[in-house]
Length: 236
Image (cartoon, rainbow, N blue to C red; front, side, top):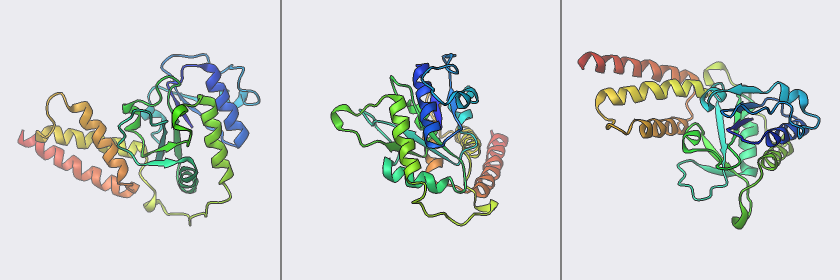
């Protein structure tokens, strides 16, 4: 699980407690505020889990080794460009992917949720079916609800046959390398207008995640794009 820019150490502690309750042990914290969260009193029974939490400088670092990155959102006043799955369906998809790869379930800050930049790293969005008039949940509660559903469906999901290395999905790090080289190629070709670099990078990042590329295909595509970029730079 990844907590991106959480502001309250008590909420981080509550999230760690929920993880321990439902049998999840790997916590990564994208922590730009240098919060003293490791001693949070709310992490009852989960002090060791909180102590071992990994601090990451960016969300990109936190999800680099994951083949599926799932964002969470209350969907208030957002223009989304991602598929959205209700919690019960999302839990089944996550459990299935966990059989063969690593999944990051990403929660944003208590105040603003996940940013547009954060969401560009996600393959799709998980939505907890709260009522429309009061859709936002406390961070610790939202984590607990999601992890309960994941634990509840643990025995319900059919296990896929183990896939060989050639069928492994590309990790976020693989996709980010593709994103960088593709954006560079688009810039070299003149496709990217001045001032639109950041928007193009976000759009390309979302596009790549919709392809569900296997790792072997991502590596092949990366080699192709490097050759294209080299040729464009030679012509320039």
